[in-house]
Image (tube, rainbow, N blue to C red; front, side):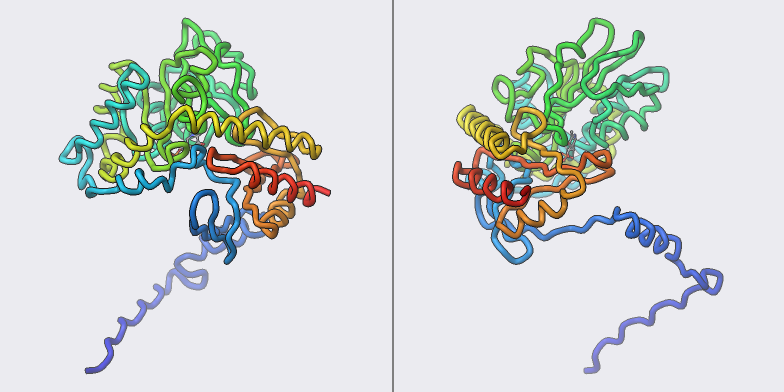
Length: 377
Ligand SMILES: Cc1ncc(COP(=O)(O)O)c(C=O)c1O
């Protein structure tokens, strides 16, 4: 039997020549490469706990958002059973696991929860459902891309608040901020963003599970109940997906009009089951260990003269132009830490961003501090 002959590649249509069908894309790739904007994916193979094989060697991760060390918990891994939803939840994809998870989250906050496939799509639905082009929204200057895009898609007029300054204009419909800023590691003075005449929406992506009573986030830690809250299931809970909390009216509107709820497949059952188990495992003991590790890291950074921004489990150290050389030096010594560059942060503000987890040991943190001390000298 002769080997199958692959079909001949179609000839490029003459009108596409001489640049070719994808020539315009190639020019953009070249330009981005010249500007140093092309990003590369690094293969990270978990080997257990906070360690993974990166570039062929086992290193300790200090850049994961798995803040409670739950991602590979045996009870969570065992919960990944069941199938894909096969349709949007409004058609035939609404599964018992979705309902159980929404009930558990609703009980935690005392208000209805609505699930989404990711924090990004949760923010898009929340902002586009609540805001109209007739509204004004006050948005902190360091808000995440998903908030920026949600506001853009809503058509609302945006007033950008300098980071941490709650100068919310009169007549604004909403102020939107994050609970814990993941590039600066800080929690804003959230009570000052609350007001009788506008809604407050808080994205608790990096604080849900970690901060506040019962891990309910930074806003509650500061004594504020936001009108609307978004939390992710992919960071502290170590799974995937997200949820939005708000009054019953919000739930009604999201289920009927939230485009990233209505026009997308429901979460696979294994994800919802795993998240439900993770929610139970995200307990006070893990939060205390996370707080202990954050303190140990921050005190250690101060002792080596590299004090970090902010005050929680995300510890960014501004290192400017040396950032990528420092992160490579740390990787060579067995510590994988993220280097954050422009355009994610302003030029000159490039930073080594260290995230700790409840699963790190004191020895791992001390080892990182030793390596960083050497790399900074
Ligand atoms: C503040 C903030 N909001 C939303 C998201 C998106 O969350 P998810 O990863 O669940 O899509 C992120 C994740 O990077 C984030 O940092």
